[in-house]
Image (cartoon, rainbow, N blue to C red):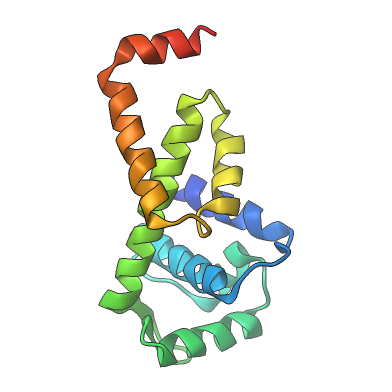
Length: 156
C-alpha cells in the first residue's frame, strides 16, 4: 500500500474516532465516498469491513449507508460483492480529495504540523464553498511563485 494513501486513510479514521457534532448527512456521504475511493485506489477494492474500520462505525451501519449510496447512484453495491464508484461518486470523491489537498498544503505553508493539519482538514473540508477553495488554490500558487514572501513569512 502507498504510504500517502495509508496516511490519508488513517487521518480519516482519526477524524471519525469521535463523532463530529452536527455532522451533516452530506458530509457523511462525502466521507464514505472518500474512504471507498482511497481503498479502491490503494487495494483495488473496498470491503464493508475496511470501510467500517476507517469510518469507526459498525459493519451493519456501513451496509445501510452503502445501500443508500447505491440508491443515490454514487456507487454500485451488491451484498457480498465488490463495491465500485459510479462516475457521479468518483467525481464527488475526487472533488473532496482536491479540497483536502489544497487545505493541507495551505495549513502546511502556515507552518502547521502535517498530522495536526490533516486532522483539521478532515474537520472542515466538507464545509467550505468551492469558491473559497478556488481562492485558496490561487493564493497558494501566488505564494509559491513569490518565494521571498514565503520565506519572509516563515521567518516571522
